[in-house]
Length: 320
Image 1: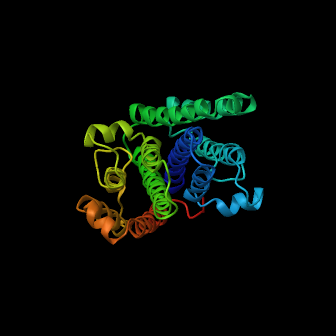
Image 2 (image 1 turned 90 degrees about the vertical axis):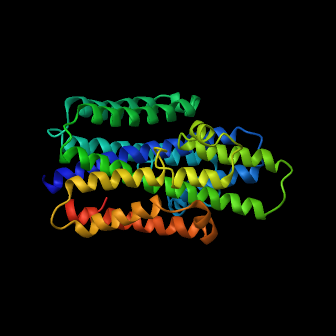
Image 3 (image 1 turned 180 degrees about the horizontal axis):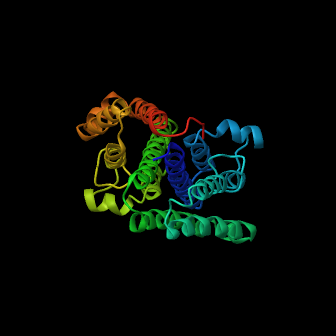
């Protein structure tokens, strides 16, 4: 396969997945902001959302140090100069799809194209302002639809495997960032001033994290107990049967990378396999004992290095 074609498919899926993850985090933050929480806690939620995508410097350069919920929503949804905004991601996904129109099935191209056209219409009206939650659900649905159409219509050749690889590499990155920021926020709250409604806050905090990755019902089914930080971490890091966990994402990356492996990608596959094995045989008590932040920081470094190596071995040398 031409590296140019593989590159477009890889990044088409990454940008679609990134738009979905942004919508998930915005939706949870928007819903949580409606709860009777203190202004400080609500502010930390919006700051954390920008921190997850490493966008605090860009936001403050554009809007100043004061973080206002409405400005954050506009920045993360509409701002075309923000590379992680929903508009920017879906535009990039559509442009990458258009570049390899001949490789995609008609159904997949029409899904990508219709998503862009419909989003333009939605943001051109006042529907987003009237009901942000409904818009975020729409973004998630369109991402689900895109993946489903790809699985249901594409020949499972190299093009398909590059498409899938991009989706799950992006998912691993986003889930790790979410966990790192949210657990850090919880630790700061715990060691800070004592809250009168600490128990209720903890439930909302951890359940919000689970809902942002469609994990609330899964958690109840797996653990059948009150929500605890340790089990949230275990579910989203080590459970290979949880679709958005780090373990599940790396399993998919390795499986797809194995199929497209070439004479130059042996070291990349070895590193991906080692990262998969580290997750497969890890225990959550050991991870927490050595420090969750250190573990997730190292994981993100390894995932980013894996992405760079995949680009070097298979894709175009340009920067996205």
